[in-house]
Image 1 (spheres, rainbow, N blue to C red):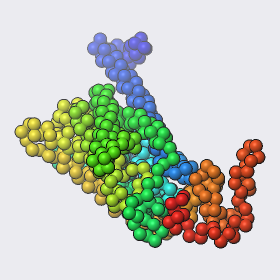
Image 2: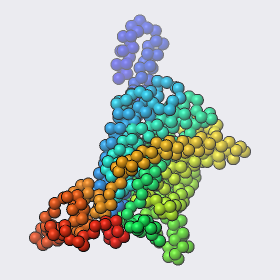
Image 3: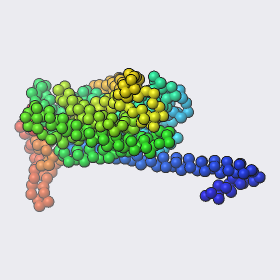
Image 4: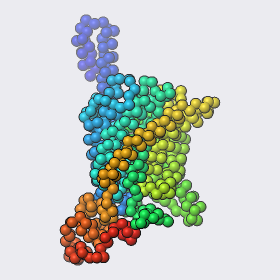
Length: 530
């Protein structure tokens, strides 16, 4: 290769001096090195994006394990459609709204206005950012499980990935965003820091989930009886597989090592490897401390409340996810102690959040609201408290405005960074509230949001996918399936048998007219038995 470069330079300067030839060779080597680094960077973008995309499997497993057996197929389809809908929406308009034209102008803007129906100048960058948008959308799926219509789900997922999320991403991450620390003139000469998306991804998805479930209402029998009277004790609706939930949690944790360290590739820095390693360490420590914090704090609370302590696997799993969500904003700029502190507090935030939802009778099937919304807020605020001067200088080449704890150590009370983080929280909450709340209210007004009571009773697998939920493994009584089919005008299924011919159950035509078949699927007895 060196001979080729020398020959090229010799042909350019056939009578050149030695200094001209040396300068030419050096320039050619630099161009070649830059091209190789760009290829490597693009490959790492794709690899990190693939890890983030694999998180869709984790979300699907968590949802499948957390819902009842009669809704598993429906939950899986919605998770699949997250990836499909987000890809189309982000390609057509989402990428343009989020990052369109950011390399062409330094003017601060509310939204991008170019590169529609395009992957922009870098396909690798587009793919990486698309996986973030898909993650934000899929957070909502578990919260609305077992009662949301497919029409509503498709509508809000496209709107969230194509418009709501991109506007927030533009404001916080684009070079033209008014909150971005990459802006040529950042807010308060500081700008907000959300390194990998505690706010942009998780808070956005979490707030959307909260608004949607408030409008949608709880599952039948969860908090109210058939007359609308509050139950003295909310009914527990356990999922069908705790093993799937644990496997999904571990898959998500694995994918987070693409989510957080991979974001270092977005920086124009000579220390990307070290920054990514710092992010990986913080991710591991926060996830671990969050799980331990939630597990043992809940153990202590249960012992004080009932006298019988129990080790809750669900608390440990969601505590770990809470720690991962919270550390996502500051993983590259936290010292190890900051990551551990962030994870410990995240576990407490989760415990408070899940009890708060129950007290206010808000039905979140997978606890996505306390995990993603509340800990998205905490993660942004934690940056304003724990951002290390040394890590800030390494990552962003600035250290004027640091975490409040470090400011106190300097003998100052500079809370500029904390103020920027707080404004980011308020901006995300406000933007999602004023856009998505009217959208969900409109869907509900049109009758497109919630499945009807009979569909919910027999399960969405039957009502949307034609499953045999009345069989022995479906968890739904045959007479309820009969009522649903009569209501829909669907003819009877034939007798279901085992391979040896033994009859398992029969759906007789006369059952269609049986007066004992429940006419009111919303009764207390029906809801409880389902």
